[in-house]
Length: 189
Image 1 (tube, rainbow, N blue to C red):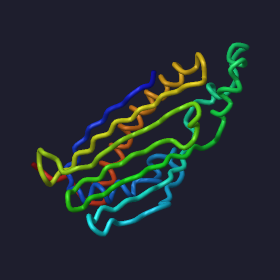
Image 2: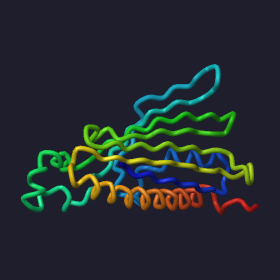
Image 3: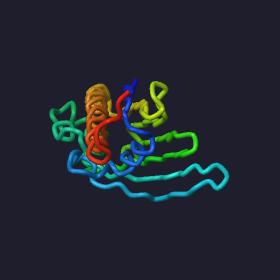
Image 4: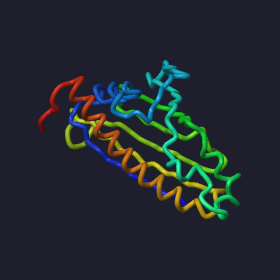
């Protein structure tokens, strides 16, 4: 089955400021779930000027403890399937393509942990806003699909859906706070 979350936000700040804040966003004390972010590859295409980055984020495992332990005989029968949930941290791989000339940045993120039983993917873009060229539009689509956990698939997907929605809103609030702190008040229309 799977769950999908769509997000759209307009930041009333220029593209360059928004992208710079995004790239410095984590880790920070406003979100203790992101432990570290490390650039593992970075290169510039000499002909286009596009900057490619690959980063690995280490995040706390946010699956509730109650879902990580056998609750009954029925769950115990699926224990082998869900025991992979017991890891303390998860890793996410983020690839981005920043095109400074066209003022856009595309981002793809996927989970490196739990790949046998879950698929988590996000595709995002930062681009100049059509409403105002001094503003930046952020569009994101995230999808999580859980397999191999039997009757727990639905429970885990429901939790994932709630967590994705709350996480997206939290990420937007963090970006707004960082932008205001680093760049001052938002630009007026």
